[in-house]
Image (cartoon, rainbow, N blue to C red; front, side, top):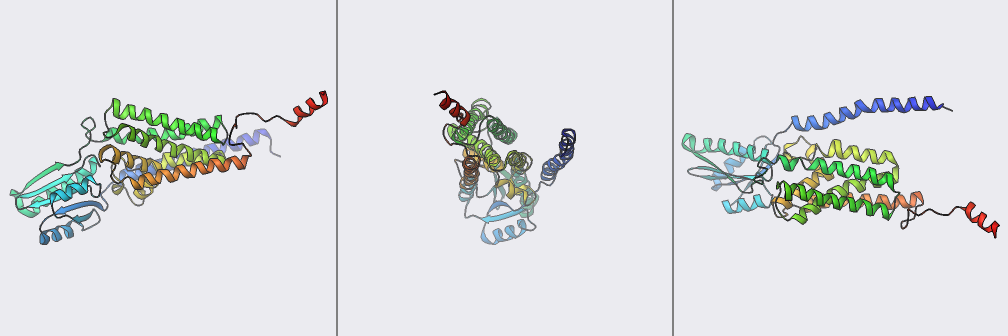
Length: 341
């Protein structure tokens, strides 16, 4: 049998080894996704006469930067941008090219689309061509580059992780724990709405809807962490927390776009609550909820899995789902009372 000193030494060695592993994973995820930013099949539109449209599509699709869609007119292209089907569009006329962008969808992507539109104008009509840019869905004037919006995701992730740790430490699996997680997430959503919309004014849209999205994002993260703790123990909660912070956050694509991240980071990020939550909040804040079904589904699936984990944890630990904070009388107490009678 190992002595207390040797057991402590083993735990210390495990901690020492884990530190460089965590640093390596964190740096790899954050630095890799940031250093390899480039357009990859960015959905854009083209409005031009048919022969010119086909020529433009073949030119833009050379490589893998753009995924080009043709539209009959500028109005149809604008509607596609508002519906989040494309990030921008190129409207070609004899005088030049009008580039339609949406800085609310992504400021870095809008810059890429604008640069491509300027290049197209030179190719089509030469030096005398006009290159005009129109921002169809603009970012909030108080956050023109979207930096404030993109900075709001990590606090939501940390809030979800920390609330799960605190509530799991202070309660056991049961309805009381679920109620605590839900209440904490709801309060986080309210506070988030007060900060980013009421105070800073960096998001638009319906305040209650945006606050609900932030609360749902926090709840999906926290309840999944709690559910993993109920089923597997603290190791499960640690794994989920690390997944959200060191993978979900850098792969979320909120500061750029999922299509700007190296594959398959963009796809992975949208399957995790940070990316789905950021995408859903962007849709409710600037696009009247367009393209919200997929990220909302992702958040609800994670939340449902977490709730299921907590409920199964009740059976696993033998805890009662209601009144789980009340102590159960021991047999020794009952025996003593019977003897006294």
